[in-house]
Length: 274
Image (cartoon, rainbow, N blue to C red; front, top):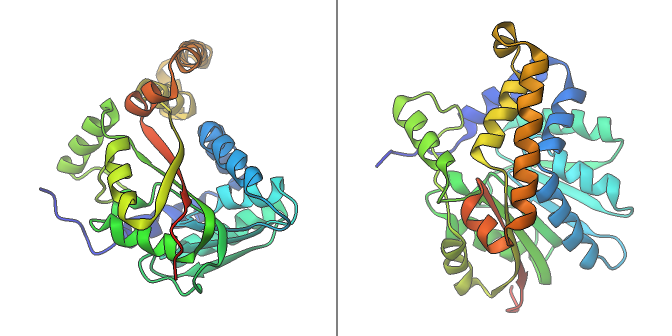
């Protein structure tokens, strides 16, 4: 078993510093939004369904906070907060908030010990965060603590039964995986984690596929296009997109939850918390 470092702070701080050095924030935001359409659609639907007046939203492990800024820009009256352990992440998030022309409060802190009072938020969500912790129940419990009764918790993590899982663990063994230690979950795993915490599963879905990710990376790679004409690369990418769009329409969400790279689960807090 691979040992996990104390936190993914070191790995991710270098990623966010790289974002700051690139300078083309608009393109990075565009790539991010393109990749997360299914997740953001699900998030927005449940945010809207849960919205009465101004919505208080918290993104845990916010990174660039693009998702929080997108929600704040889409839903008038939303007050968005983000928490991340990386100072570099907070700097990126502030730049992103300016690009979206929204106000977002960023807190640099540990997701296992948040400073927010009990029952502070209508919606708490994370994407690509939980898999970096060997004690996921502690992280979810803390999110439940700051969630209002009847509030909504949305968690997106890598899905266990995917080719991407094999690829990721090979890269981790070779020491070439830049995102630090991480694991993956099935729908059943997430249900088990939520059961003692007074959460009821109200929705779930899977999105993105390994070949689709490779196709996307090819289209964005200048080194690939030095060897293969851009028109061919983009034609291949378009064909892959069409194939997987058809697959997503044919497959039920249950199948997507066991075939896709990512799985998103949506819970409602039902047991009165502190």
